Image 1 (cartoon, rainbow, N blue to C red):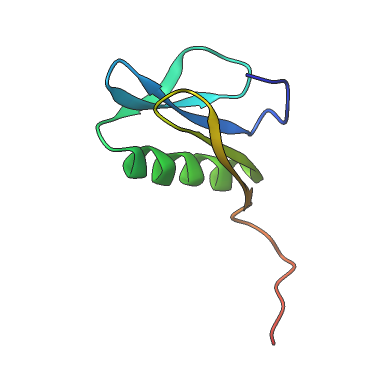
Image 2: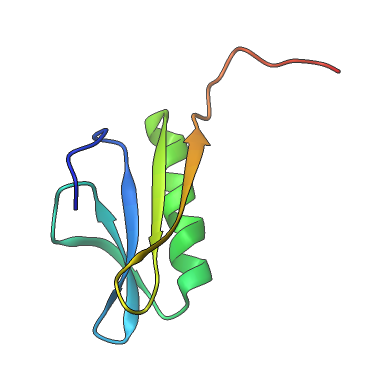
Length: 80
């Protein structure tokens, strides 16, 4: 994994489950049976930390998608 923002999280396959892993680390923060559950938890973590990138890997380990996740305390809201 790369060396991005300290708030970034990767969702990766691990031993038949899905792990949420901090950017540039190997140890999982959390493990989930379903990839969707791991993605949701990663979004929560990133939001609570103030925003960052969510990197979702496929079962083969290749990056499948990247999403920017905003922080939970964003004062810049727009009405439209």
